Length: 182
Length: 109
Image 1 (spheres, each protein chain N blue to C red):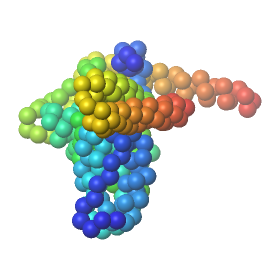
Image 2: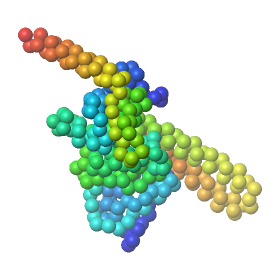
Image 3: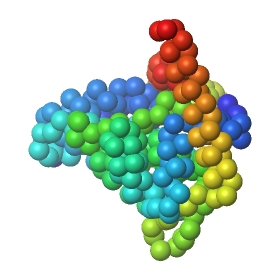
Image 4: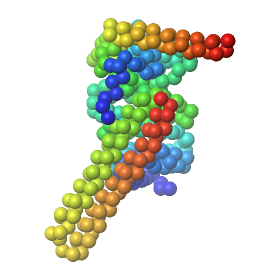
């Protein structure tokens, strides 16, 4: 991999949740630790010691700036989960492999999946909107620029929508699994 | 999805039931995980995300309230409403255990 920090684009926050665990574990073994995530789905890793710590993402109703976030973090830290970073109401945590999962109750877990499903629907809608906006812009440009702008717009929209739809399906499957234990 | 107000329907999940029982005496939110482990002799572990969500839901249903706020650490305590809900739940769980036991005894002769 790279020397200092390295970046991964995991196709938007929506889709990122799908490949998140796999990629993060893989780079973790090579001594890269997750440092931050951006809304577009760029994952930044910093060089550290190889570790097999596992990551969990919680989609709470709480944003980082909100009152009560310190209490939220404290409860996670008591449960053995260290805070990594946030995007909106999505929060990443890491812990040694044997740590108990962040959700031990299938009903609460289902509620998290429902919030994530709604987010992925918004991501897909946003992707379509981006395509429409780029299409409207591209019509006013000369032919060569038109191709570039249109290509970019369509690419971005595709990535967002397809990512969100895949994510939506994965969440549905996870949720059905969780509900079987209710 | 409408808000899952199972608290209104008088049904407590296992986690909500144990959190409510452990707040008979006031306690910090972050200490509840170990308190519940002790209370159940190590039988039940509650994950932090489950605990936090349950605390929020119980607060919204006014089954628990904040004893003091503003000094960083929040202390929760069961309310009268919560106490009533807990008693109803205990009664229900005892009855259900009884039904199962009776069926088992009768079946085994």
